[in-house]
Image (cartoon, rainbow, N blue to C red; front, side, top):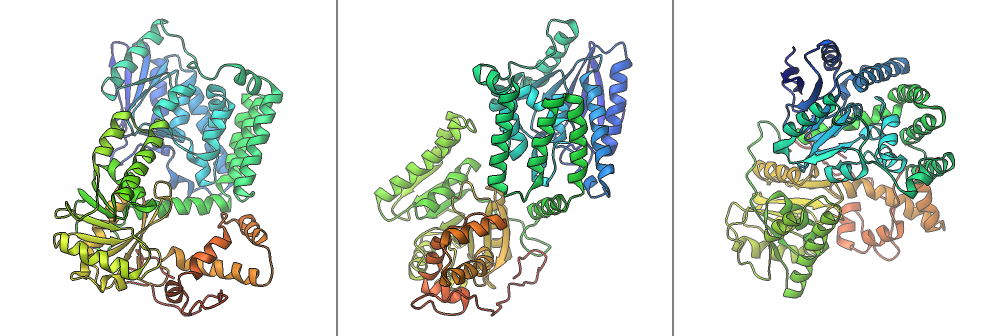
Length: 588
């Protein structure tokens, strides 16, 4: 046996452990697939083996899918199609194996990993928070290539399957059990024990192979069990995809074609169509660019935000937030679930109370979606406290200011905060337009001042801009970047230049829209043209008001005052956004 796949026979049940050496996650590389095929040979031929369990040696990942780097080696559509066909053959063997196989799933089960689990006779999953299921291929401009477009709809129903295939979103354990994706959900401590017991029951005939309870009822009969109902679901799904993508992303439409083909002409034809479409998409320009974006995002997650050798980030155990409004309460809502003690401050008790209520309501939404338990909600809320004074600020590690966008106000709270905190505390401003260096002018320790620009709504928007000044200490940058990642954010580090990054690239976009408005084009026509081109709806009128109503910020951003009817044309003056670490900094 190889070091990647180990096999331990326990009273007729082969426990197969997948643990790719020197890797954080398990992926189905070419070598792993070849070794997996040899394991299937042994399971088929060894008379001492009556059933099998596949488990992971990684703590939080079952199988994360295919090795994305292998996609970069694909040169032709026929190569990609052959890869898909090979995957079909391998998983067909798994599904039809003499010895029934149980998938013991703990952690992320994604892409090809989920497709392998679907081919198993029985699926037992742990109820651990990190156990999630997804077919994220559309996010790479692809479709599932291991039979996912055929097995999943027949297992969980057409609507539930399309919701996963067309969006790539995660399905947590409880939802997976509800829709029939898994047979059982158990505590991680007994996962292996239950999986082995189910494998023995399958071998003895006490438990029959087959799908879980799955979809049922009148809706299932109307939509899944007849041709007209399926056509209606497919048509509505196609309309939603086109409304969302404007046809710029071909993968969701191809996935719909593969699913529909399988229902219309049978699974064998569906598998052939899946392989053909996978081959075409794998060499498309859209997929190439999305794969590039995947690798760039992965690299960004490892970036400390400062030049090497990077100083170690400081721990953030206690956080103070100035301003209990929409942004402040949103930050508190994502900080508490990470175990951070949060102190939420505002000018009066009514505002503090409203902020705390918003935090609870936000967490309650997660409870409703079964993303957290009621006990977790109570535990998270116990970490969040409110105040109208600076009491309790003496030992905070980080202060995030989310007060009104006014330089004088921000400088005032900075002075007050420094008087109430220890010298090592970090002060971060959530401003979207005011220069961090101007705010830091009021500081006695400007090296501890930095920008942390969250986006609204904080709980949903993934980006976090970290803005540094020439005086910001590398230790401060590294700490804030590390903490931002712990909050689940995609963190980019930019210099303290006009517009930072997002508003800087937004300004020319808004300027051109403003010119069209000056020329008499209707706002809805401008917005519609932008969306059709590939942008999301931006509510042009609101954004123009936002920029032009802040005279000082607009002057800083565009290099000209906003007087009377705004001059929308973006200034060509280029303030440098380069740094000593250009690879790690966004540049204009």
